[in-house]
Length: 301
Image (cartoon, rainbow, N blue to C red; front, side, top):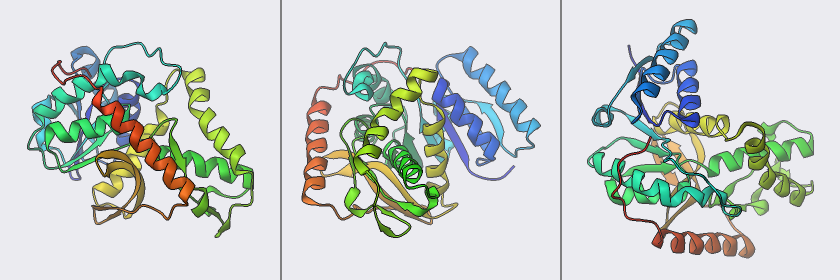
């Protein structure tokens, strides 16, 4: 067995889909699945072992404990506390009060960890900041704006009737209703956008609800965003991902360039309007962070 060791915390819908993608892609040499629900984690592990054998993947899958994560090259946090999201606005923030204590508890147990941490748990910009401040870990990235950016490029390609590979553009800021579309630096086939951008932006806002209404929760998109980021964070390929990283005293989605696994945030050129939207998102997140509960509860995965 060779290759990086990756741990996943959380065996729910996103964790299961992510683990399936990792095994099918044979990205890690060893995959540890951690959850507070023993029956679920052992069942998922057995299912993934079957997948690994059937696809001739080189990934060895094991059930693990939180203490085992210290031996991983990367840890993906996809836990979700038990709660019912009743929010009709700022839907991704609906789980903040329930998920923050769980993130804090896990962060305390991972103090001293020196690998890469990818936070998927929503609201991701708040949770990535909470995890970092409690754990002291130096390499923490939030997943979300890279999924927003991928959706933006896909939708724009559909409207322009071109391949998505010809579209260049970023969605930054909060992974949520205050996402900032960088229209001013978006290009299609190397040229400024010549399609109805507002139509694309409206479709971008509708897409999460389309998925939730159809299958209950987004799973595949976040898993793909994690997989793409892991390849870069582990130094397997170079490239850019829009990830939640420090922006002043808050965390926001910023394009981040990975070179040999080293990360360097690179904020694109912004118009005055785009900058104001980004600062508005930062102000809202700053206020929301002050209302998070203390991190004193047990881990929920």
